[in-house]
Length: 324
Length: 291
Image (cartoon, rainbow over all chains, first blue to last red; front, side, top):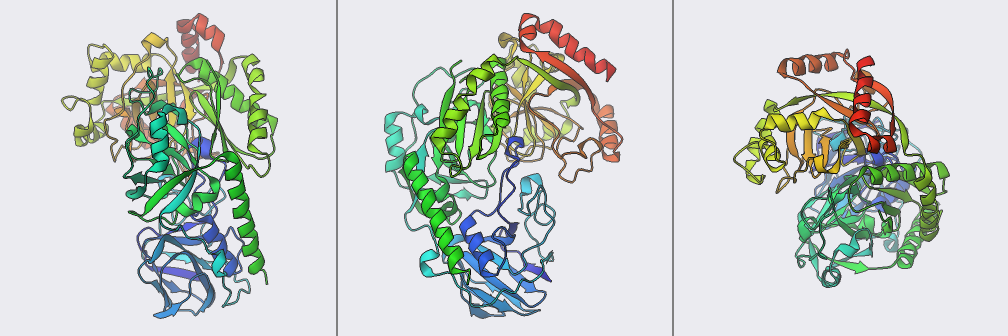
């Protein structure tokens, strides 16, 4: 069984749940930007939750199906067509050998996850099939898919068409999207007025928004607490001695446009970070499009942990509803 | 030095040894991150040491954030008492300074530089009080360097020179980052040198290029069969200036699988170094003679 890429879309890549363990060497965890959507897509086609899928951003690919199989598409809202026939999102459906899967224009979210029963079975690197182009790891020769690529697919597993994720267990970003942030790291570099402004202002997603990080614009420029810059930090008040970056951490080079680091994060650098988006909201960022309005909402650790528990409960419900 | 503990979201504890860079801060960060690794605290997922700080990624469902931070804090006094001694390796890294490829690149991005009239090396020499690029290059390679952090992307080493603070070379980063840097460029920003492991964006000044592959995801390079990333925090590097002919020769040998860097095992003792920097460095570099 194979999938043949006829048209690749914009930047369609093989992703699973990533390769943790190498961030100390500058190799990020990577994996699906919207992990919940990837897990759901896999469960719909009877795969283990961490199987590899195709992640497509803004524009869907065109794919020729090599053998009869079960497919499911989750995440953003994009019309699905199988030989031109519409199919439902967040629901499994059967495809026959030779049929062509294609997509209409994106109507909501930013990324879709295409799962196939058996899972994409390209060669893993460092324990994961996730594509990390900077380090040439995973995917097809370490890059996003191209026309003519033939992706191997694992053995079929008895999945059935018509399985569906209930409406209340599908998650999108809302508008304006709200991203909860735990202040920390170098938060104290900002003046009180700038600390307040960060949460008061409405930001919009800038065009530089990819798997490494999302940039935001439109809020007030930030001011820093006066200090003599420490030795080795660099002269700009937003500079620090190069340190590690947390996943989800928010850096603001020059104090102007915040950047939230995501799955393919650089592991360190010389810009101050004001805190991090909480783990429960990382998936939502993967569904943000440029120009969408976004508010950052201040939370404390107990709220962050509560949100994390809620995400875990939602995942448990998803598993239960698809276990039948 | 004043240690600062903070959270990076709900999954990271971030520990800053000091705001400013120093070998003391680096040693403490390395020794504390080793202590955290050895402590096997449940829920610890990754430990990333950096120049003067380190970060622990953990699963807060296994160990609650407050507990995690407390357990890490308790390791601090142990790390302070640890001997500031390291068994490590010194590696001779060939560098072709003022090479044509970084020169072509720096000319292409000249409008993003502080001083568009000269090269990155001319600028670095001038602001550090050297008469010319050659004298600056001499200062860059005559004394060894510590790999104080590996990261940013794909096995990129940050290096800090083993000299007194007043002899540290310092240069700012580009005004705006470049969108291109040749693979294996030897760069400089703040008080750190680096080697760009892969081609890509970058903001450090560009001084030269090494023919030595330091990241190989296919692991075809003779000395990267065990792991795709060459450098580790704590490695010591001695730059060796080479000319075009030697660059071409080494590059060909790396590709043929017949070249390997000169490496020697060495002991580094921070107190001994602070007491006699020139003597300690001379001994480190001598070890390479037998390699």
